[in-house]
Length: 163
Image (cartoon, rainbow, N blue to C red; front, side, top):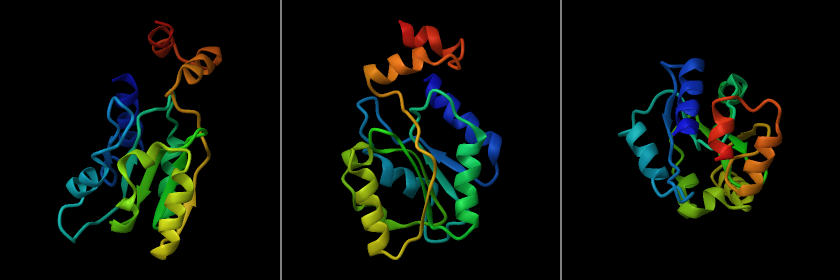
C-alpha cells in the first residue's frame, strides 16, 4: 500500500491534470488488468493526453521518472518504457491508445523477456519507443535485502521491509 501510494503521489506531483495513472499489478505480481486499465482510462476513441501506467514496485519514486517519460512522449515517442533490472517495467507511458502493445499475455509484463517482446510489438506496429533508466524493484527477497542495505532508504519504508 505504501509503494502504491508513493507511485500515485509521484505522478500527481508531476502532472495532475494531464496524467492518468493505473496500477495494474496484483499482489501475485501479474498484471491481468492492464488492458482493462487502459480501456478505463481511455474510454472510446477520443482519447487525449498521455497515460502513465505505474507498477508500484519502486522503493523511491523521483519526479525524473515521470518527467523523462513525458519528455519522451513530447519529443514524438508513442511509448516510453521504464525497465526493471530483472525484467518487466515500473512504468509504461503512452501518448495514445496502442492496442498492439496489449497482445502480450498478462504475466509477460513482468518477465525477463518483457523488453524484447514489447519492442518487437512496437516495431511491428510502427510505434516509436523511448527508454528510461533501469531501476531495481522490490519483488524478491534479494531486492528487499538490497533496499535495506541502501543508506538512502527512508525511515517509513525501512521498518516495513525489515519486518
